[in-house]
Length: 355
Image 1 (tube, rainbow, N blue to C red):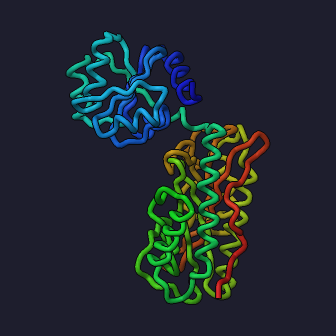
Image 2: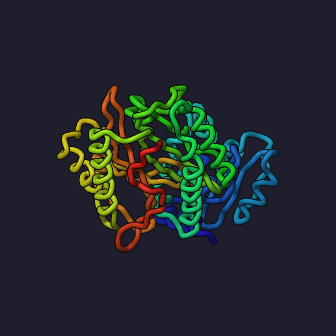
Image 3: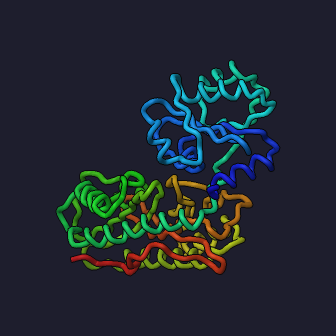
């Protein structure tokens, strides 16, 4: 059996639940391999059923061989609940956060509400298997190669959205299924927008340009940010760039098994604050990456007691954003290892002054 199925059945045992209904698309894919847009799992120590409609029967059989494919005439969720009602189980786990109010009313009209136990399965995805890490690494390599291809085209007069389109084309040519998220190309004053999705602004000499982009390989995401300068950097630009780079390197050095996520964030945040830019770094230091682009745990002051574990994959991405002036962010994707971390992003972090 797969590592994912074993994790789920171990979780069922720990929760003393006879079965669980898995409806969240990303978790259906994680536990079964099925990536269609409509499918629901019913899992117990002895039951492995995947409910799909006509459109996905063959795909389900091919991609989820550990599961019995059940062809539904009705909505797969309704069919799965009808099946569970026939099993007469006293307690059934379900992904409460994934269901709408209407969905919940439907399932409780078939199986009494008190028998449904709200369950969170996302935590079972936080530590990646060797196979998952290999896919994320391939997705990260696509980013390195795509960025190298567009570097010669970053020049004054080209629009941000043109660069984004070229970058996305190169990622697809290199094997990315799609973009991992809306590609960020933010230049000049717009580089102060942490999520400055590419617009129609034309790049100009003297601009800082932030590129934040992601690829997807076999469902698994990658994420990288680099900031370049068009022409020679000013003293102010170099000061801010060097501050962000120092914070990023310190953050990378703090990544290790057992480290509190908020303390890793604090290491990098402290360097930026000491340089006088603490008010201009408002987001967390990083987040986990996998089948979703943002997963838990997060490197953040709000991470509570969450700790890093060997096999987690996280970003380390500090930034400084000065309104109406510009900003800098540098981001690498790393795997937490037994003695620290392994960096999956290999594009240079030297400040590139493009002419």
